Length: 221
Image (cartoon, rainbow, N blue to C red; front, side):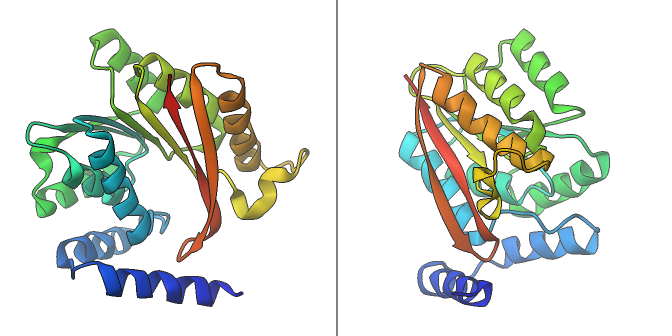
């Protein structure tokens, strides 16, 4: 099967199940117009994140990697009244675009965005006792996956769901000596989850509008 087929199936899923969403369409258009990289989750993946928030009954969500806020909006929509997404973004321009997108989507009150290096922001969250979080979504620079997962453990509690995106890398994750820092970061995520006795996890390979990749998902025991 080709990537064209994968994209067509994703389009079919969205057209068959989802209601038209001009707000999210406008968010993606804004991200493109503002020069952000086209690495947002797909609509089907965004809806999965929103459903995971609802399934978990999460009221406190942590996201590492905001970009233009597309995934943030999906998760914020799944929150109950009074719920909050704390989202971390390195790039000030991305953060500015994301803030405008949050306002357009009407979720600004549900979002606490921290701008700066994620590891510094995570340390600040730890010192502020902002956690524990009910769901943590990691989708930032891949070489730091083990550091982000380590912080996720510190900011979690039994029952916290942790999702780490982009861990299959077109299947390159099986290459032990790939020389690709992103692949090595994906492998490090698997090593972390496999070695952490407090985590019970798996990973799912995915194909679709974003190509061939996948995500790891784990629950804190």
